[in-house]
Length: 515
Ligand code: HEM
Image (cartoon, rainbow, N blue to C red):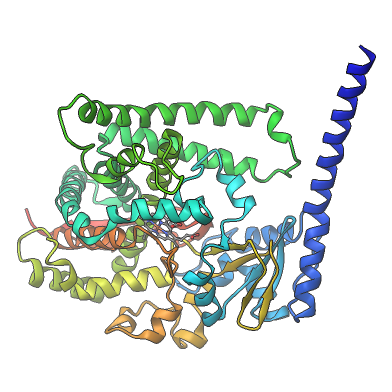
């Protein structure tokens, strides 16, 4: 009995000592070493506080700058959304280091260094940090967005073909059908005397319906329930990630972890319903394949083993959650900001409408029409420049690497402030904060280097072409069905909660153009 107690006590002691050592090096030793390495190279930043780093300072600055709406519809929003960036880059130069809790983050704005970091050279030795992965573990798990190294490589190769031109071509009809339903419900709203609508809510439902239908073959209802649950999961996991991490704390049950578990069970069940019905069709011999879309590609993968990697059912579920999340909100925000910009720029609205009429006539947009909608393309790019839905790009160095002359030690997080780069007057000129789609006329290499709404390099957005195609179809159909102006109730208040969004939505007035 005494011996058993002694052994148990020893095991416990080793566990506690190990946890203490991991916590100490995580919160003190590693950050201190990184800080010294960067200081030696002349890279400085605000002084961090123990455990919280500069989190409190940046949160206080953002809380103050976003506490009220903007006085006018100005697109000069960097000072509002990233006041800490503006302050620290003034004090410490454009490459500076700050602390997200105990995680050191290096802010990078040099385009050559950014391109190098995002290039294939570093794709295997950089990726999503432990903090990020931990924060989204119960939300999107090991799906593509959070995968690293050889797993990422394998997953990317599996899903990428589902977003190539030949596959995307087949999605046009479905996108048009969903948008037709949107146009009908907007007409109904106007017909019933309500000509002012908050267009963001409609567009969020639309992009949700589109991704659920094209990639997962989900019914509207099933898709909506999944989005609703994922939203709750996202909020809960974001709240839990604010707490300090101590090794082993996952073993202690909490109210949050119980709620997260329950939500995950519900999402898992809904996704399993879709998965099972596809499997039934394929496996009882009624069909030779799992059908179309991403889910079919993933299910086919569960039957294979390539270089020791295979898709488990859990990974299929994580991937589904990833694509439901990544393919939905960002696209809805692009469309919502584009509608705000068109509603406040009637000349560009007219120009785009005229182009749609000339290219598509009375038909809905087709795959062949899309490349001809060049004005619309410029408008979409300018929207993504001014209001990039993903306004920060994070990467972590998993090994010591060299970027330009900078030595980046293993464990340093690298943050690319896309919004600040997109609004930089030195790059875009003194009119950087103005809506001027003409800056995207023709192709300019120098502009492309600074334009990062979808990131760049091998780990760029896998759904980029899908998103651009969807945006063109939806905007073309809205432009040819309605003219619109911004409502006097619109309050210009961009905020950044993971993605860049209008705090109070975008109310617009619609006037139907055709019966
Ligand atoms: C306007 C719409 C969109 C924007 C602005 C956008 C932006 C981005 C950005 C900036 C990244 C890189 C994130 C990072 O590495 O931290 C990314 C990655 C990703 N996006 Fe998008 N995205 C959009 C639409 C879509 C759509 C429609 C899908 C799916 C159909 C999608 C799926 C993904 C996935 C799975 C990744 C992870 C890729 C990887 O790590 O290999 N996105 N997106």
